[in-house]
Length: 232
Image 1 (cartoon, rainbow, N blue to C red):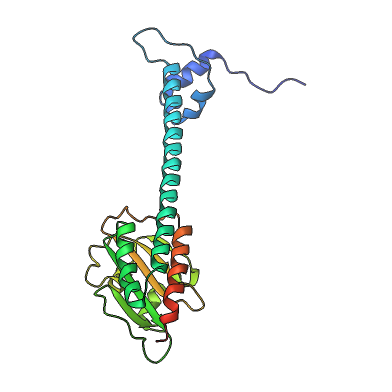
Image 2: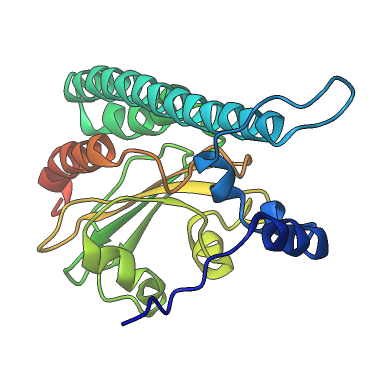
């Protein structure tokens, strides 16, 4: 039997490339597999294009590595700050000292513009809270307006990024238009003791790629510090 395969001549390749001058732009991966010599001085060779692509790939890999290293550095710094913060909170001498300390320390450690605490209670009357002047509001755990946080509370995980307008209005009624990014922490679960929100006017300050393990730990510690006073 004869060979049905048709060979392609160099002339046919040249003719095809002449008619499809953007072939290598549309198929840049082929450049990576070609063996090319340098073109005469004053011309741009395919080998030059190949070298440019190699440099571009190296730069992308370098940028990715730099981003990973920077992210790890930030996460390590975050772990240290939260550890020290939790120790200071546990050393608070009284409930009256704990609440303002919590709010001011969160602002300082996270370089935040706003901090909000929505503390849930389940009984008929809310526990007595000391006057702090901070953004602390008690709400019944079954309050209708808390349904906008059902997704957050059901996941029982911290969320970093942007909140809806309704969520910002509930947490930051006086500054909702300024708040651009938030780290939102549910305080424990079964039942949840509340929501702690750390906010910034910078939309890049809190983002979805941030580590949340340490924020989860902060939420658990805060819940344990507040829960003994939930029935005063």
